[in-house]
View 1 (cartoon, rainbow, N blue to C red):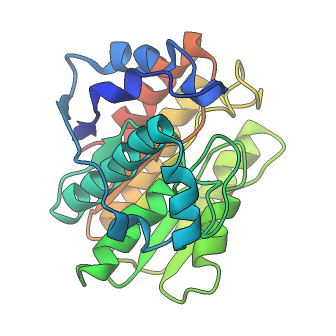
View 2 (cartoon, rainbow, N blue to C red):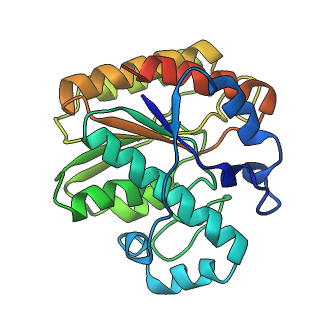
Length: 251
C-alpha cells in the first residue's frame, strides 16, 4: 500500500477549508512511519483534457498557484490509478479535492476532477475498459456524475443514509449487487464523521468501509483499487479517520 503525496500539498494555496493550514499535516502525521510515501508528477494538459474542456483548463491555469497544486493533485490520482492497475493498492493524499469539478465548471473547493482523470488515464491507455467509483464524501460528487453520467463503462455511486448503520448497510447492499469491473476507484471524503460537518460516522466506521471496499475489489475488480482524498475538515480527527480507512482498504 503506497501513499501518493507531494510536499507542495502542504501549501495554503487559497482561502477555503480544503486548503487550510494544518489539514494535510493532520493526515501525514497519522500515516508517517506506517506506509511508504511516493511523489507524483504533475498531470499534463492532455491528461486534464481527458475530462475537462479547454476553456475550463485555461480558466484554472490563469490562477498560477492554484493551477500548480491542482495539476499535482490530478497527477497524484493518475499515479494511484497506475499503481492500482499494476496490483498495488494506493491512497492519493492530495489537495485540492476534485469531485465537484465538471467538464466545464467547478465549485466546492475543487478545480480538476482528480478521480475522473485517474480513471480516464487508464481508459485512454487501453489498460481498463470498466471502472466503479464509490464516493463516501458527505457531498454528492456532481462533477464525477456529470463526467460519467452517459458512460456505459464507468459507474458512479454516492451512498445515502440518515443513520450511520443505514449508510454502511447501503454501501454493503450496493457492493453485493454490483457486476465485475476492471478497477475500483474511491472518492474518500471524511466530512461525514460525527465530529465533522456530517455528524454521523465514527472513526471505526471508516475502517469498516475500507474493508467492504477491499473485499469488493478482491472479488469483483481483480483486486485493483485506489482512493483519493476529497473532503474532511476537522483537523483533530481527520488523520485518525484516514488511517482507519486505509487500514481496512490495504492488503
